[in-house]
Length: 186
Image (cartoon, rainbow, N blue to C red; front, top):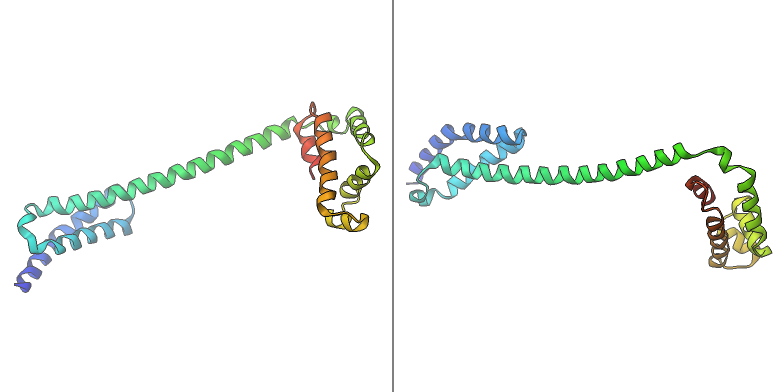
């Protein structure tokens, strides 16, 4: 009985494996996946050979298995494509924003006397300690930790003074281009 089953299966395999493979490959365009799908269809048929009466049309059975495997594969590929496309779109928008910001950047405005005057007035309106901390951070390029150690403050206290200056500058220079804010946040 087992020999007969194996003989029948071998005949089916030699008749239909290549057809199943070509059917899958024509849709998925991926050789290894098409081979896997054809093999899985054959395995599923082998598992159902005991109930051979249930498999009336072997070719339809095999092609249904391959079709379903191929559909799952293509749906997965479509989902991957949509995710990549979404990521690409977000990157593209961010790149366009950076290009437009840079195109609108006018160094003459950034370093004009008016901007410099607003900057100096803003600093003058703050306490001596806040100005000193900001100067150490931005001009002397000291870290918050270094400034805290030199002045006997906490790092959070230093960060508070720096953010206070940046907040005031953002308010007072709000009419100027975003590039200036970018330069100040360094």
